[in-house]
Image 1: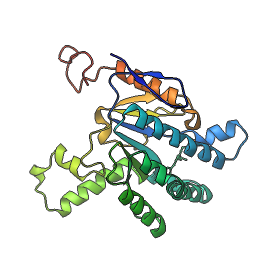
Image 2 (image 1 turned 120 degrees about the vertical axis):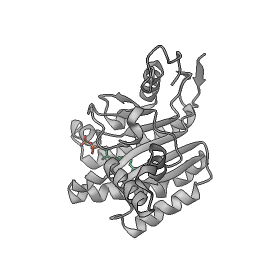
Image 3 (image 1 turned 30 degrees about the horizontal axis):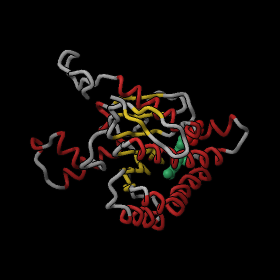
Image 4 (image 1 turned 90 degrees about the vertical axis):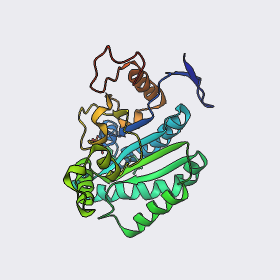
Length: 253
Ligand code: FPP
């Protein structure tokens, strides 16, 4: 059975039957996209932000339940100060400009990552955006901002120790509860654009059984059709979760 994804602006495209519930995206290649066109890096980030709008819409349209985007990593503080400022400003601008439309589209915004080092005004804005959209159910948008996977694990372990949990009581389920993604299913599919083939500290705990999809396309050019292509590739993979091929029914996963 094949469902049809409809979009007002574009011709219908075929959507695979098995769509991942949770997609993570490493939106890479804004700088190289700009460089290839003789433009400043800031323009690459601007186009990358525009593209994010399109991809969020496509995820809503395709029935994806959770989208986690890697917007600013704990390592991104090492970039030149001007670019760090630009990236911090982008989130503020996106919230100012897009919040109402995201809300109208049923998007629930969540922040995952450290709050330390972020300016109080930005934190307030993030907090207000999360509060404003908290009852929306069409798509959960996790914005990984000031986020690092190892940092998240350390944070979880510290919280468990602070809670006085005996060592023998510590389980995978418990660690899940202490992650920023507590209560959400693990990502099924992680997409990375720009030809880099590594995880770069993104959801390293949660993505233990995720399928990875790498594409050479730079983020600003990764469009709806290419997302569909990634979904098709995902639908063809058999997820075994440690079992044998014979144990897994076709289409399961
Ligand atoms: C990677 O490009 C992208 C980032 C570091 C994050 C920027 C993301 C956006 C602008 C999308 C929207 C952001 C928010 C906050 C909602 P790069 O600079 O690493 O590219 P390069 O590897 O080609 O230099």
